[in-house]
Image (cartoon, rainbow, N blue to C red; front, side):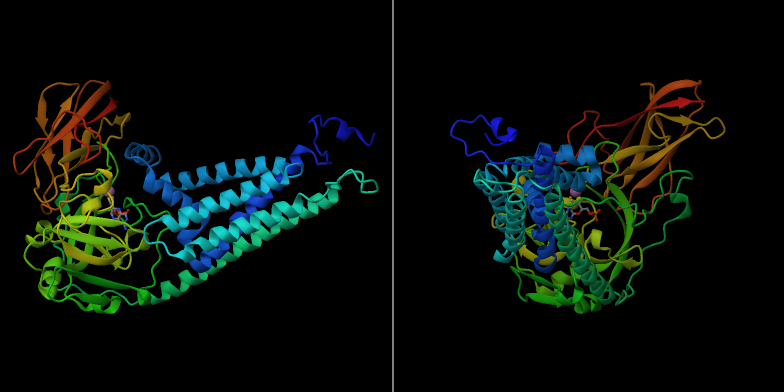
Length: 523
Ligand SMILES: Nc1nc2c(c(=O)[nH]1)N[C@H]1C(S)=C(S)[C@@H](COP(=O)(O)O)O[C@H]1N2
Ligand SMILES: [Mo]
């Protein structure tokens, strides 16, 4: 007999081998995974940040996820939906890697095949996405190789065949050194990737300090009486502005490398550099944007001052031909496309190609260098960020990202209203018993807001001043009711005379309907 370890291996015909305790093997699997992630991230920083294996798998999951899953993610995690997704993928990867580590000493070929398969998943995810290039396979190939080498190396430490004369026990020191070296490699590769991306960022950051042109026509100032005291700020700051998109990594575009092409059924197609775009005539407008994924009472709505080139100017320059009914826009974030009714960019409303937000250069998260904005339409049919191309075309020729996933083709913003004060389950103070909130029906305007307390009769709220039909409108309502618990509901009527319907609908496919309701307590 050799040693006790071998006797516990009862598999018939097995080639028993010494292996370290389970803890060491788990650690080896995890370290190999870390080396893979580090290598993938490092190479991705050089090739394309979106092709980093975790990001590529995450992006593919977003693409193939059924609509209810996406709605659930947006509803449950809000803007954190993407970190949650990437963390989830990382956890699954680490679990699999830990398992492969367990197997690595006695079933090395199985474990190594497992790592290779994980790498292959990354390669497929990175290269099958729309807009991918063959180079996008590199980070996953590097990750797979790093994982293979790491696990192969580490799992040879301490393993010994039965041949007499080899070391009797796996040496802890050797294991620690092997796993440590693997983890260090992971940190160096991953850290290197982070440094490279930061350096690139700094370069692009310097180039975007070109400043903004001044508009030929400024936005009308927001009347002081448009703001109800204590209510949500009428103008939303850049930091507070909601963010919704499918980009797992915020695109950071170098304006020197960027251009905007405008083509399709036009007489004079046009390609503009960033500088050329900034030289076109500009307007500045306050406009309220809304996301179709905003639930009743939800936060995906905000108002900013936008600086940009009016679509009418673009239409004039390129000479749009008859028969065009769809504006098809393309983004640089991996295959995102958007479909906008041509009518909405040509009927005289302030549709524009935006380069500035709240007096600043458009932030990366909101679409730098340029995005589209069309008052009155939900963001997914009008607000293309990281804009690269606008094609004037027809609905029977092109189908956009969300359209092909069943969302509405025509998607005007539905009339909505929200109670912001007091907060749901909050307290209405004795000295200032005022409910307040916002209502919006962009491009139609708000005519009336009504409040109903404890299911009683509808009563008119006081409307604050209107700042324009493309903007939300604030309201307030004094309530001196008995102390204790109450409910309040709100509904708005737009200037076409239509009142929000009571029946709630889901956000899919054309936006949520129904009345916002809160519970609150009177002091
Ligand atoms: N490139 C790109 N543009 C996009 C999206 C996207 O996923 N990718 N999402 C759209 C949606 S659904 C909305 S509501 C708005 C949100 O714009 P914001 O993030 O600046 O608030 O951007 C639109 N533009
Ligand atoms: Mo949206």
